[in-house]
Image (cartoon, rainbow, N blue to C red; front, side, top):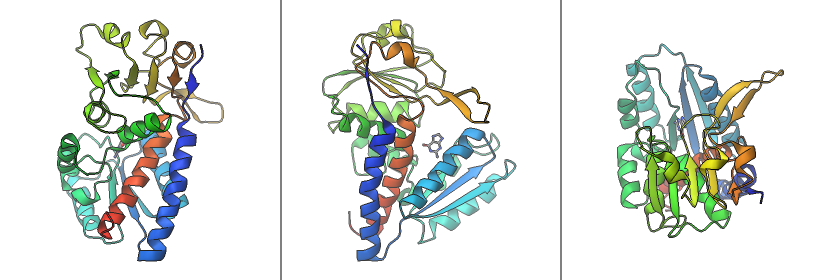
Length: 295
Ligand code: GUN
């Protein structure tokens, strides 16, 4: 058996078409243009390419967008001042500070400073708390995108064994929380594995759905999964450079061998990545609708 490839590119395209319509309607009926600002500190190549892609997508959907690129030496006070400015700017409905930040900046302080009503990343403790309680909030973009991929691919999650590799605040922890809730793409039984897990293979081998978010290229091999598993590969690992200077990417899962055992699998690139960016746009549109009193 060879797996059905879940195309994040195609699913993201469908969602972007829906969003384009919503953005046009917001503009025509309410005179509102959803606005997003991305703030990048430093020049990590992965972060630069993400932020650039976010700006391009925002533009393509008809959003207002600003992109702020700051040098790596920027001090925390300056960054906090900028966030304060955008918190008060009515043109801006979403503020995204690209992570990771340079070591001299306290990430927690920065994320706490963002107005929770403009926290389209869903990283502010107010939004994290609401998410855990199952209340209306901004869902973090990568887990949100994965929920959409599962739903739109018709993959049943209710009662399934979902094994997640990686306990990051951005993916692993929120993913576990969302999939155990009574919600679409939820109602699953969750196991979250991390660096101190005793026998990770024991868990991966019994997974109906395996979500890998550890940042280790090709970590998961075919002999670590069962036949028919659904694979969601969140890894975006730069393993080299092509002759034309483009990064060569690998996921956390060894795609070629694992796809022969899986029922569904997401590729890297073209899987989770495009979904993350699209959900950021969805959250920004949601924020503008909230301001307009439409939600
Ligand atoms: N770095 C890696 N993923 C993300 C994300 O979803 N949002 C932000 N702000 N930074 C990230």
